[in-house]
Amino acid sequence: MNKKFYALFLVLSLQSFKVVALSDNEQLLKQFHNYGMTHCDKFILMQADLLNKPNRSIDIESPIGELGQGYSTVTLIITYGYKGDTIKQDLSFIETPNRCILTKRATLTSKGPCSQNINPDYWYISKSIPQIDYTSYRNKGDAPMLAKEINVGDFKACIQEFRLTSDSKHD
Image 1: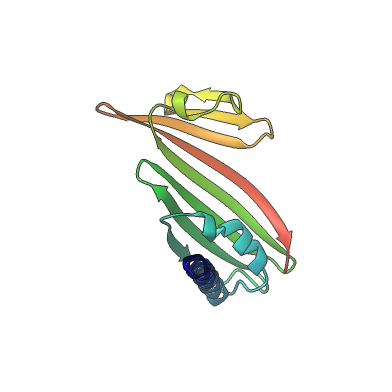
Image 2: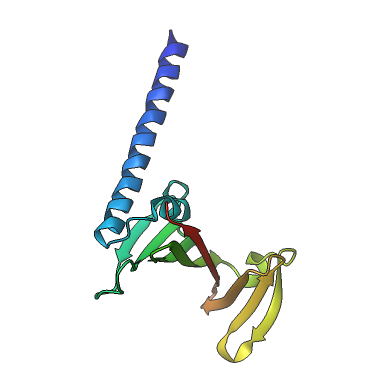
């Protein structure tokens, strides 16, 4: 009987989790729709990926003023992770009459120097910019990253910034 109880409890827990996740996605889409972005729902949910962002905080904004018939833009800022290992994503969505466009920027802040946080087997230095404290990296897929090390007393942190542009047809 205990096994049946635990199995039922597990099933109900998973169903509850699914309902909560669904309402998070529905709430997100409702806010996008309020800003006039109504044809990119699947693209928005795939890119926002709320289920895989622990301890998240979300801000949504849209510029004031019209962009023109059939055009809208919404920016979604998501911060998530854990103290000492946080990520900030800035997702700028543009809906045109035919496409959904995204420019995604992410900032990863990690404890320790960049030499311990950036995998040299995956990233290579494409340009050193010592006059402004940044180093430009690329990976084998040619994705860009900027990195900067900060020091406050004995504390060191590595700030890594990533960017990506992608698009999709309307839903």
